[in-house]
Length: 271
Image (tube, rainbow, N blue to C red; front, side, top):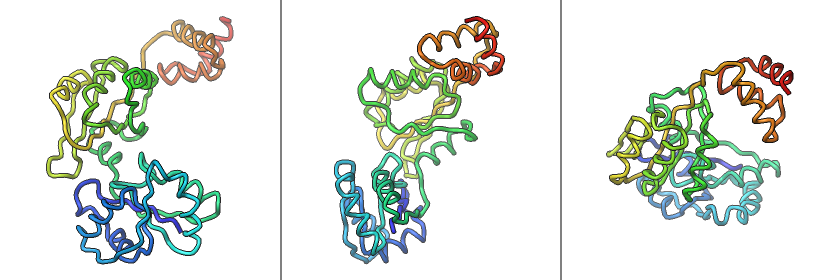
């Protein structure tokens, strides 16, 4: 069996009893960084010395088949450096291979930077999307953010402290200077900090330099208030760009609150 185990994202006291028990009895651990796992075992007072196999972004596709075969006869505990494996961390390909091979996969739930940041942000939590890390290159990053300009759900990102200021500046350009943003730094650690403000305000703050692990939570777009005629124009523009009429009407309806059927019929009549 493959066992995905969530590890603390900062505070070691967040390690669950099930995690400690699993670490104490594991025969094989597939770890993102075996050195980090060794330090975790020591910090939690676990004397077990299991076989450690490195499983990271650069070798997962090669190692997955081997680990799945091992998992037919023994439990394999899978760890990332922090949080739940597979969430912007190694493990997804391994789980995919295991599922296809009929090998059972389970999880030991626990700390999650994504959910922790979302919970403390004060932004809507009923619908959200996790976007992982933004592209490193400025042009690609700005393009990716522009593609999210009409996203209605709250968005959660991971970001490097070295790129945070540039990413927030691009966010202000792509999503609007007044878009509500929350930057969560060093969650669950001694220097935990949660900064709330507009995109442009937080870009200015981050320009002074930021350290630590970063999560960025961004408010979804508000519905644009336009009349039916302008809505039909937007639908037809999307159709001209290659989108199906039905899909275009749904897109504009979601962004504006105008009725999807009403937009579809009006656009159909206007073609």
